[in-house]
Length: 377
Image (tube, rainbow, N blue to C red):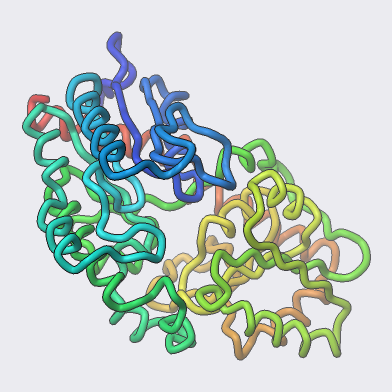
């Protein structure tokens, strides 16, 4: 099809209001490269990633200031843009949760009922609306209990409080129901979010220049295993440590654990690692695993068998569990130079095929344009 974003009048796209894992900014940059005119706004600066085009406040504002800034961006979104893409399941109307806090029950009910009114207003103004979910903003607790390993440990984590998650999910479902386009970052969410399309994660902006164009070689000395949990209970960090301790009896290994570090430090850590163990619970892999593969670094993760693509030869993440990880690490440490390079080469091919920013951006821009043609926006 002829894409409007390549025409004389560039498609004007606003990404907001948060930049979790740099996904909003990375998508916007890739869309700009294809001719779209994109802006990225977030309410507060993200502590681990470079600033975006607009950051409203350095510190969390009082209630009146918050209402004013949201109203101003709501008005500008209606007036100045063809597309508004909401990220991490957050709208212009605030979510009923902020961090790990939960306001009064009355306020929660009010915010849930208002969810999506901003989207409806934008659509009435002729603006195409899209919303992306990253996982925890929409995944039901019952899904975790049924499909995750060590679910009881995960559900004890503070961020998985039942009342908080239920309120956030109700808000997110209302937001999704009113948007033109809905995206999820992992395949398990396709069955839990109505009308969802898969939009896989892409590397963050600081990691993009580290793209591998040829297979990596193993570093000398012990096998350097990198693990970077956003949450230890969620990622299964204790089980990673146990497996490393067991494997260390049979192989020369070194575990590097990173948390709460900036993206440039993650890039440096990836350059000094032979292998990444992403997570042992969820059944898929996250943004950090994508960034590792982008640099040619092989990745191990728990992968649910029902989510694994049928073309298993092309699938690069190495499926492991907490029960098998120790043996898997020992076997991996015994790979020859050429065998390691083969794994790295497959990793590069996979990430180019499944997580290319240019290809993903083009697909999303095509979706925007398709909706505009259908609705006459």
